[in-house]
Amino acid sequence: MAAGLFVLVVLVTLGITFWAGRRGHAAEDFYAGGRGFSPLQNGFAISGDYMSAASFLGVTGLIALYGYDGLLYTIGFLVAWLIVLMLVAELVRNCGRYTMADVLSLRMRRRPVRAAAGVASIVVSLFYLLGQMVGAGTLVSLLLHLHSPAARAWSIVAVGVLMVIYVTVGGMRATTWIQIVKCVLLMGGTILLTVLVLLRFHGDVGSLMRAAASGSGQGNAYLVPGLRFGHTLTDQLDFVSLGLALVLGTGGLPHILARFYTVPTARAARRSAMWAIGLVGCFYLMTIVLGLGAAALIGAPALRAANEAGNTAVPQLADSLGGTILFALTSAVAFATILAVVAGLTMASSTSFAHDLWARAFRHPDEEPPTERQEVVVARIAAVVIGAIAIVLSLYAQKLNVALLVGIAFAVAASANLPALLFNLFWRRFTTRGAAWAIWGGLVPALVLVVFSPVVSGTAAAIFPGAHFDWFPLQNPGLVSVPCGFLCGWLGTVTSRERAEPDAYAELEVRSLTGAGAV
Image 1 (tube, rainbow, N blue to C red):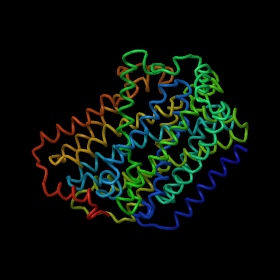
Image 2: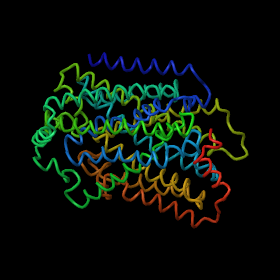
Image 3: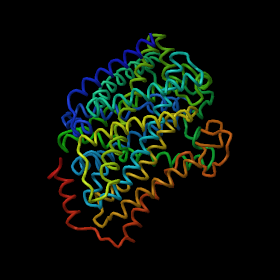
Image 4: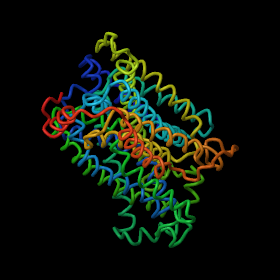
C-alpha cells in the first residue's frame, strides 16, 4: 500500500508536469507561469511552497522531543509572514519581473547587483534543498523499511531526478499546480491527524499536554522554556539567533519572492499573501497538536530510536492512530510535500542562474543579450546541475534535523537578501556598492559561521562528527550575520563615491506603490 501510494503521487505530479509543459514555451510561461494565477490559487501555491518537510516532519519532531522550545519554529515561521505582507509582497511584484535581482537593478548598475543576488539566491535554495532531501531519504527508508545508507542514498537520487523533471519539463506553471495539489493534500492530512489526536484525549488539551510531558521523559520541564535552548548562555543566544533568522528570512527566500510574479497585479500579490497567512497559521497551530500527540502516544525514546532528530514523528503518530492505512496516507502526503517544495526551490535557483547570472551578470555590456528561448534552455540545464549538487550535498547531511537545515537557509536569506531588498525599496541614498556589500557582507559571514559551527563538526549529529573545527558555538549564524548584512549595506553606501540618482529612486517609489510600469 505504501509503495502504491508513492507511485500514485509520482504519477499524478508527472501528469501535471507534462500537461503544463505543453501549454507554453515562452520565458514568461517558464519563469512566471504566464502570470495567470488567481490570488486564491497563488495563496495555496505559496503555502504549498512554504509548508515544507521542515514543517511537517522536522518541526513536529522538535515539538515532540523538546516541547515548548520546539514552538519557536512555529511562531517564527508564522510571524515572518507579517513582514512579507507589509513590506515585500506588493512592492516586489511591482518592481521586479522574475527575480529579486530585477528589483535591485531597477535603480542600480546591473552587473554587480545581479551577480551578488544571483549567487545568494542559489546558495539559499541549496541550503533549503538539503533539508527537503534529508527528509525524503528519512521518509522513504522508514516507509519501505530500507534502513541501509545505500537505500537512503537511492531515495535522495530518486527525488532529485523527479525535481529536475518537474522544472525542466513544466517550468513554473507545473510547479505551481503541483504546489496547489500538495497544499490541499497536506492540509487535509494534517486536519485528519489533528482531529484524531484530539479525539483520543476527548478534546481535553490539558490532558494531552500532561500525557506529552510524561511521554517525553522530561516531566514539567517539557512544558516550560529551556529544554533545548536554555541550559547555557550559548543555548539562549542560539534561541535568539534562530528566532531572528526565522522572522526575517521569509522575506528574502527566492522561491517565495518568485511566487508573487505569477499573479497579474500587485493587488493579487497582496491578496495571495493574505491567503497564505491564513493557511500557514492554521497549519502551524495543528503541528503543535501533532507534536504533543507524538510525545504522548509514541514517547520520546521510541521517536529517537526511529530517528535521532525526530524526523519520523508524524508517520509514527499516524501509525499509532490509524494503523497501516493512515501511516501510508500520511507518508504519501509528506512525500508530495517534499516533491512540491524541491520543485519550487530548483525553479528559483535555475531562474536566478539563467536570468541573472548567465544572461546579464556574466555578459559584457556591449555583448548582444540572449533570446528568451536561449535563457529558458540555460535555465533547464541549470536545473539539472543544481539538482545534482543538491543530491551530493544531501548525502552528507542525513543525521541533521530538517528544520535545523532550513533554519540555516532562513539565516542566509535574512543576512544576504533582505537587507539589500529593504534598503533598495526604502532608502533614497542607497547605491550599487551598498547593495553588493549588503549581499556579500551577509552571505559570506553566514557561510563561514555555518562551516565552523556544531552543525558541520564537533558533535555526534554533525556532518563530520569525527572532526573538531567548531569554534563558532551557535548552530544558527543569524545573530551575527544578519547585522553584518545591514551594516555592510550601510557602510558600502556611505563610503561610495557614487551618488544615488534621485530620479531613479522616485521612479522606483512610484512604481512600487502604484504599479505604474509594472510587468
